[in-house]
Image (cartoon, rainbow, N blue to C red):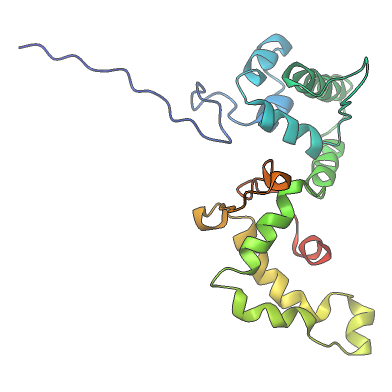
Length: 202
């Protein structure tokens, strides 16, 4: 009696390559800053991501997306080209012996950029069962001394507690119930790692 083993199919996720092995880069960031990966292979791997993921990454890195005219690059090939340009910059930095300080700084700057998804996710967290009873804390009055120390001192405790669920993948915070066309491209499941102060400013 013979048995045949079926080949397991990889799961498709929003943040990983569908065909990546544990030893391969699994995020766009891994591909951009993996010095050991040749440019042609990195480009081929980027093409395995969806256009939406690539476009979001371009926005996070504040890369220039042109939507109209002869320089239009608002499409998948254009997103890959922009990200590959970013990878070449990083490769050149390594060739010159520059450490990863500028890269970390650029990454931090990208993480502070708001996207169309942020406000919807923020509202989902704010009006969740965990935080809805505490929304009134946002308007806590502060003393003059507290304001001199930090403009967000009065509500900082709220936003510090708020930060963890905002940056954690939770299925109950990914829902968007709306038929309005304005929200068709909004994805509250997209997590942009803002800090507590940034969430307060939002």
